[in-house]
Length: 66
Image (cartoon, rainbow, N blue to C red; front, side, top):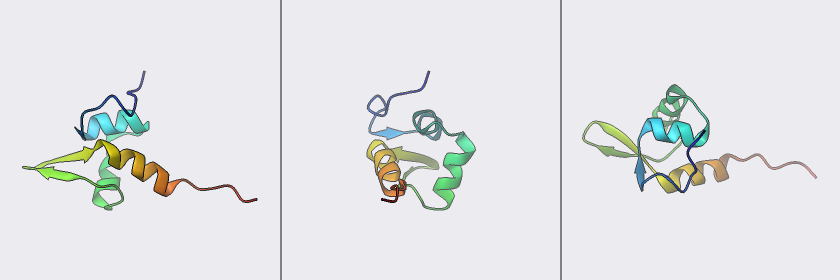
């Protein structure tokens, strides 16, 4: 069972982000490397703001043609 988007703390790990988005850890790392999703660098750890997940989804949703 996945994690709901409102469940994680304000900053989430790659693992939690992957669970929330239904992706693999490597897919999330690829998004980070490509700077396609916002992150905060805490020491050497990449932390993803909870609202960055929703923003990424909204900004990358393909709308159907009418």
